[in-house]
Image 1 (cartoon, rainbow, N blue to C red):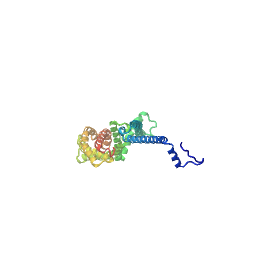
Image 2 (image 1 turned 90 degrees about the vertical axis):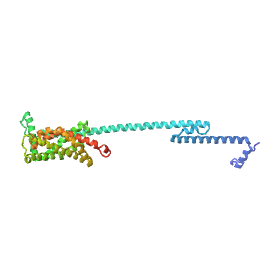
Image 3 (image 1 turned 180 degrees about the vertical axis):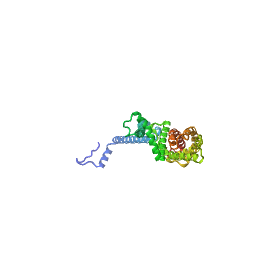
Image 4 (image 1 turned 180 degrees about the horizontal axis):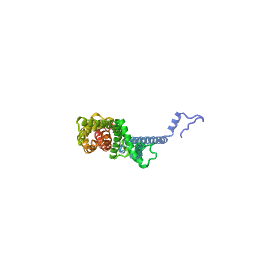
Length: 359
């Protein structure tokens, strides 16, 4: 006989009456109510605990220590749940790491391919530039040589043209040489040193696209401002010394001229060449003089293998004004040897300076 709480239709019972009614319903209702409440509370606590374990496992996975949670003092079911969660977390973290590794490998392959394509494009560009320069230079020389008799060849046969072109070019060269000897010899030496350095680089195994244009330009300038003017002065001074001072006019007077040339002018010019190249490369004075000391004796010995035989013709048969042209023709071979020697010295001296500058 549990009393019912009476109230007006539009009025809810007060809290006091509801508590009083709950006391009259007995312990069984309270027990059921408490059991339901405690069950809900326990389930909420377990849910919170699982969320806590999951967050801790995520943090442990981030720091690389998930095994520590499998030995925690928790219930067996909770321990099994935590182990399962740990394995799931490991799988979740393992898959992105593998994907990340694949993504990291892909840019490296792509960058390697891009660098290779850039290198190929640069080589093709250098090859195009070098080839264009050579074609223009050769076309200019051929046009100048073949057009020496333009306007006066009407009625000439092919044999007459072929005979007159070399003779008229030689006559034109001697006229220019007599009017401007130093400038003509300077341009001649610059041309020869350019050809010699190109040959030297080709003997090193470089393709046309890998030729060092800066090195070729430096050799050309060395011939232009060094060898041409210096040779002009030397041949006139040497001839004046032996003819007017020593009065040597015998048939064998070329022998002392060759000896003096090899022992005096040879080392002077070889060291001047290395000095000019070092200045144009902005090398330190110590490095330049070190290269000169290392190269003096080897170049002198190398010169003795070639120049005594060449100078038998130079000082025995060739006139003074034309000696440089003859020597320059032979210089193509000698400049190849000289450029290789200078390049070898520069390569030996640069290992410690590779981070500072390039050749």
